[in-house]
Length: 482
Image 1 (tube, rainbow, N blue to C red):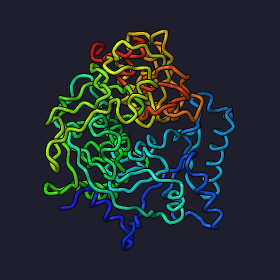
Image 2: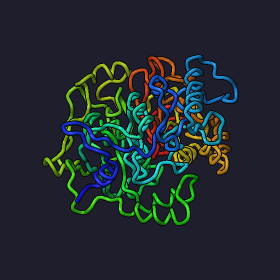
Image 3: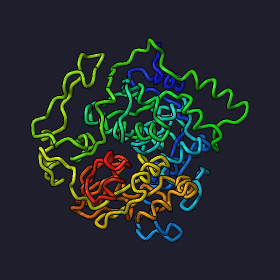
Image 4: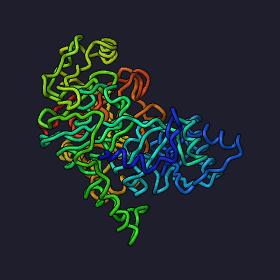
């Protein structure tokens, strides 16, 4: 029996090149302003039109400011990239969701919430976190700019078929443990290259119990384990989320689509190239201490020393290669440099460490559930005076829902302000940059050197951990505030 990945992949194969890649049909292409300009220039140079413009959706998100979006963008580079995307979309007849449009936001937030990303699809974008859309039961992955041009021209792409991996997390998550903590835990166990060459299917009790927002967060971070992408088989949670959305099938088309979507699952006898099983009981709220997302610890744990520490045998079981007990990422492989950059020491517990910035948002944690979680912690409390907080919804739809639910009033009473949608402080491509040497507890996806601004120090965490830090001014276990 084929895996779900095989089912979707095989259905989209146009042809297989002997001793070469597969020509794969693509159902949906998303374009943002950073990785698309050269692709459109290439189309012009060859005198080509888009093969299926109706399958392509464009919106700016990386360079957009999160305030005063009704005014011209001050930064000339950002303004040029945003304006260029608008012109390219118009020239090639593509759907464009510009700033201040009700449809605008982060492309990986807008796609699912509008029903543009659907089960069984192949979805690509010139952005590594395209794996987010895998939560819908789709095969979604990031591509390079030359490949963006390939899809614009032909609605196809040349790809080598990845290997398959299933990661199951069983049991029940404990108090204060979220999908973000699950992802950070998996990255620490596998390291940032442990899933290289694989497409990951997430399964198990924990995954089945996750909301769609949680699933989107988990799939978003697949790339940070080195995976080509990650996805979750669609189920009733998926179908309920999609039903009624703008681009979702309607009427008889819905019934037909639903019947097909219900077949999208790996069989009981499906064979994966690799299988890993983890226990939810081993996962607590987590934070990172280094300069890649795999350098993470439970919030009550200490930073590992220069010698990588093996996990107890059985913490993760690899059914294809015996017991799975990879090393934690410590001082080896750049760990000493990472600790020096972060200003931390091996053996240190980070609870109580002062922080300067808190960022809630990004395609990882910029959805309504994330704002509900943040608000649940800060309600009745006040933002710490030493903390600068950027709370950035992933789309205008999320911002409006925040207002409809009164979360903006809860947050305002605690001293927080809701900004306008965009990628914001996830990466230093817009005005929201963390200053050198400052510590930011961030719900985004990467903590590389300078990721949030030159010299900035990023500690990745869940919305609950971010909220706890925002009101205490230090790294705090959110379970003491719940």
